[in-house]
Length: 452
Image (cartoon, rainbow, N blue to C red; front, side):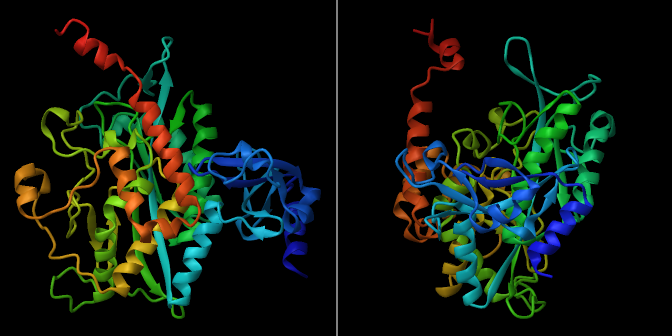
């Protein structure tokens, strides 16, 4: 029996009548076609057809040949909220060839190059997200059906989390039925902000799962009268949402982590390979930021300092300094265990396929050139003034999308990791910045209307 015959039997056994053939656009938004399960052969061999000009960043116009989304059988994901339907992540093809503008195809290309060098990239991403409601005037408010989630520091608070427990349990059960290994859920630092953590695995699977997680939360939240948003910062006075990346390189043959070394002179349990990878991340950090924090709104989260601009809880939890340390959340990269790095700057608003692709390329550049990230910072980075930071030669991440895009324009390593997507991305994001910058906000009206 071949893989396709086995899949047909599985679909019949599980009562699957319809398939969602799914890819993502340049923003990471899920795009789908729904087909009867009887069309499995068609969507595996030829693919479901899409007009690329109707999708952001696909490198096509209205005259272009169809993009054909070919279902990856290994990604069959039944929808627990719609039991007769299963989702398949797909790769885009045009004229029978992999489409280089497809973020998933691009990540597979980068990971294949990594494997040729003897490595695999294992990653886990922590999807923070808000539950919100729209008020009659169209503005947003935190979802708070029992009017109890109002603390300045609501993180881990039982009373604040209690109204969301049914939602969190349903998401957890849903994902564990799929074998994801969800191991904890909590109330995060902002009101109506939550996080669900699942086991990490290879980078491609993780990107597929983050995409499905967003699809899942959008549907399950509706049952509870909420909108699930992965926008980086929906409220100016509350902490923003990250997609923190935990990662290590492993040997492609043995699967053993190459980031661990008990003899590490820096006492963090990390190997020379780990530090070189980190050195590459730091060399390219400012350009990486354009991809890992790719919206105007992301930079409302990725701000320097505390003080008057701090969230209600007192901390941003989003370091903007290009530093690493021990188990220390004021650093860009936290060493969460021996050979285990966590990048805390990655935004919930990123496309996970593109973010992981550029991250791998930056780290690999560090390994190839034996780049040193310098010594770890072990103190509280929030206590240092900007002048102190600069005097120590510590780099600072871009403070606007415009600044990040300008860094990306200059970085050939990061652009190469995006392939032809790079030019589309830079053009699209430049237009996004221009459109935003031309807006007159209510803050400006309130500040300046009678100021002079």
